[in-house]
Length: 115
Image (cartoon, rainbow, N blue to C red; front, side, top):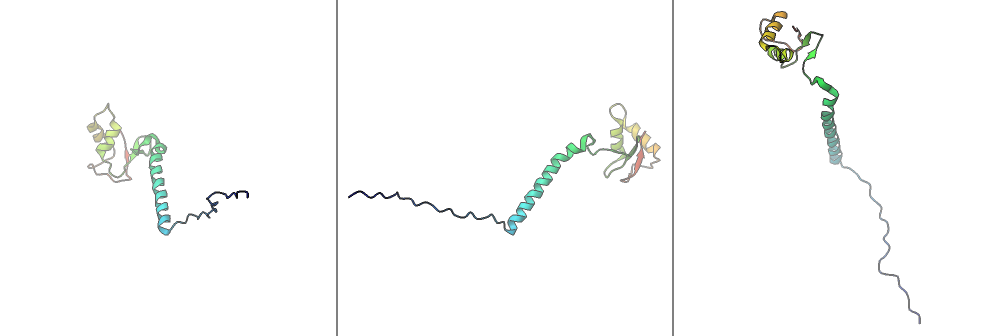
């Protein structure tokens, strides 16, 4: 009697249906928060490159004038205008005299003529 051949022990696995990924409300919120955080991080990296050499310093209104921003003082503006070759104190006096300032009080948005 011939020997009966039985095919080996493992049954062929049936392909299980792969379930689709379903996000819960919490998962969707997390994905949105991560996307927004990534966008903010990317924006903070790209902004200095787009802004260029201006660096958010003085905003010139004309060739020899400047628009006062919040936190600016006559001394800080004079320091940027004076550079290395002039004394800041003389530039402060010239700015105050040129703009008829009664002190060092500045208002954001105010336009100052520069010497």
